Length: 311
Image: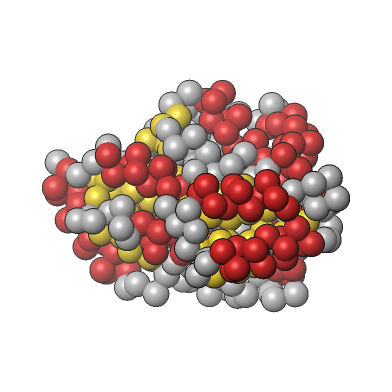
């Protein structure tokens, strides 16, 4: 039995998510380090207006995830497994000891800016709920063209998939999905076409920056959200982080991999609780909990209980 810490992706952001962090020494240190790495006060990044920027969103998700993880670590909690969906892979890598926090902040600032500059408008992502993967793939094949690009982006669950592409293509695919019987076709709060070939060029630029940054072998069991497999070698983790923006996310199998390897307590770090919903069925008879809104003493007690079972 063991604990699995997971970190959400873009779309989970919430205005005020940094200002609402607990006023504790580890959290203050995290905010100070991030501000120094960026050369700006990170508390300016989490207003509703600032969060219209992909760069600001990704930085806030990184900082919030690391700050909350360090808060739990300060209270004696730890994890055997970590993983993150998309940008969530960066706080996961920091917590796993593979990437220094200040380097992660600078790389994520570049990542967000590259993605934003590549597709400043006219693109996004849509979740399709209630159809099978083959149905979604058939819809993509029917809608995709050079003028209306659309791709599979996330395999979130057996009946939940995310597609990425132009707004015109997304609207048409959503219309067809609903006509085919989808329970929902919902635009996500993401303004770029993540996890598809449209971002291959920005990913290559990010990889060039990554080549100049130290990356260590993770000290925790880091699971890739794209391959759904453990990564133990620094260079493979570097590749995973640099290129995850243009690779399909297989979160469904990432959860399964963690469960099959003994994870029974799934803790989702803020912001949001989307990943906890996805984990519920996989983690039966284990426990999937969202840290947001949960009492600190409850999270500490759950972690300690799982630790006793592990040892």
